[in-house]
Length: 141
Image 1 (cartoon, rainbow, N blue to C red):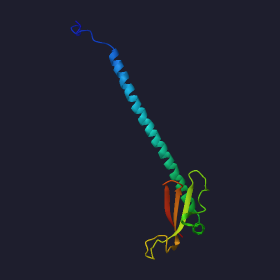
Image 2: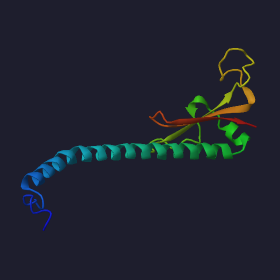
Image 3: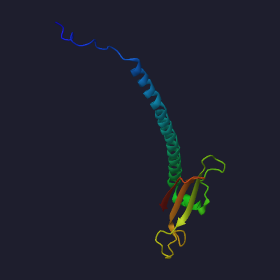
Image 4: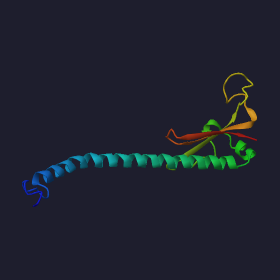
């Protein structure tokens, strides 16, 4: 005797209502998922631009730091005047290099690092024009 003979016939497969419910759920969730993916792609693009700018800044800083102190010191134009190490005006994402003598010991006691400067200490700043991206360094003889 078959042990299942006392039970009504079991359903095999899925019903139309189950298929319809599944399709509706998938349709409802597809739009938010694609929006989330699109948003993450935008963040990745912004992050890649920031990374490229950071490496461009670091490359220019390394170029300046690799030159002899006397060469870099001769290009010192002050903390607000671009030096000859800067990109030419009109260059997209122009890198501007500022070089100034620096008061590291504050011997004049005015707490201004750009007055009463030390002869063997330079302040360097490289920035992307029109951006907040910048790097700074001090250079000694």
